[in-house]
Every structure is written in structure tokens, then in C-alpha cells.
Image 1 (tube, helix red, strand yellow):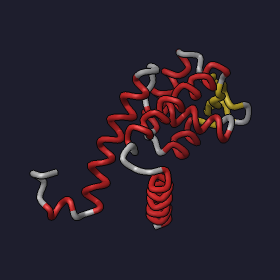
Image 2: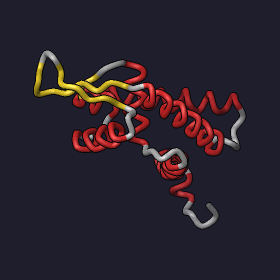
Image 3: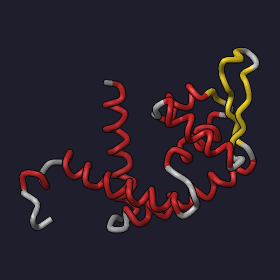
Image 4: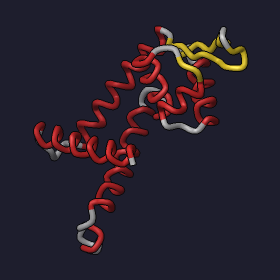
Length: 146
């Protein structure tokens, strides 16, 4: 950061943006090693944690645009990671279910993302990592409520 103006490097917003860009690149590369994308991880994680959901629910839970949800579910369905069936209460809606193959893929993605976390946070001690995670969680929670 020798060539970066001090006006920038003194601003947490600028630092967060720079780290976010780097973290996104690492995560994309990590997901690529198992033939997936970040959207796949979001959907599989939501289905694993919350169970069967409509495409609209997945979009809200995963902070994804409707068209991105549909495209990612199509890709996951082709890989037999999810199953899409008509909602018995509303035939206009689909229900998405995690399959055993999807649960295995989620495990692979979790392991890839764990490696990314280690790479990203390598300069920090375990205590510093917990502190950083806590502070970022507080910031995010505050701004989501606002």
C-alpha cells in the first residue's frame, strides 16, 4: 500500500472494500476447485439449514436476484444436488429440496471455503479472527436493521 494515498488507507470503508474484493476472488477460486459458484453455496447452505423452500424464499434468504436463483437452481438440479417439485399448496410455485448429492457437495464447498478463510486470515491469530468476525457481524446486523 506504499503507493496508496493515506487518505484512503486510513478509512475503514476503503479497507473493507479492498479486503472484500480479495476475499471474493479467493472464494470464487475455492468454489471453482469443486466445480461450483458462490450462488450454489448460498442455496445449498440455506436448504441444509432451513429445509425445503420455494425459489422466492431462497432468493430472500440468500440475498439473490430472482433470475440468479433460477439459474443456480437449474445448474444444481442438473448436478442432482437439488430437486424441484411443484408446491402442492400452490402449483405456480416450486419447492426446492436438498438431495444427498447436494449435501455431499455442500460438504466439499464448506471445506473449500474453510481453506479460503485460512488463506484470507493467515496474518491474524485465532483470537483476532474471532474479534474480526464479531465486529463485522455487529456492523452487518446494525446496517441490516437500519
